[in-house]
Image (tube, rainbow, N blue to C red; front, top):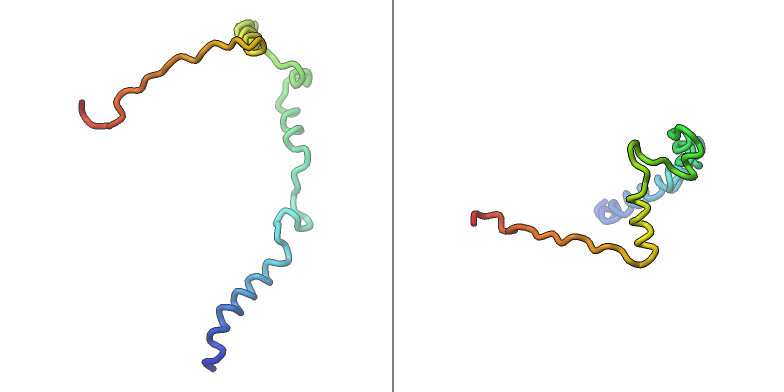
Length: 95
């Protein structure tokens, strides 16, 4: 019976591989839920007015001028530089 002992791991591996051959992708099995245009349906359910999807809505108390000016500068190739940020000591010890 010892001549078959080295074949045991190979047989176990073969059985495990064959057991999984029926459905490689669990979403492809019959009867499994499949996402289809779910994001769009969810977005439409969350919108108060369907027209907001096309043109958006400004926040309360704003007219969008600040954001519009930033976009215009970006389109014209004249964005403002980001402010420089200096970090303190990184050692974590006492000064």
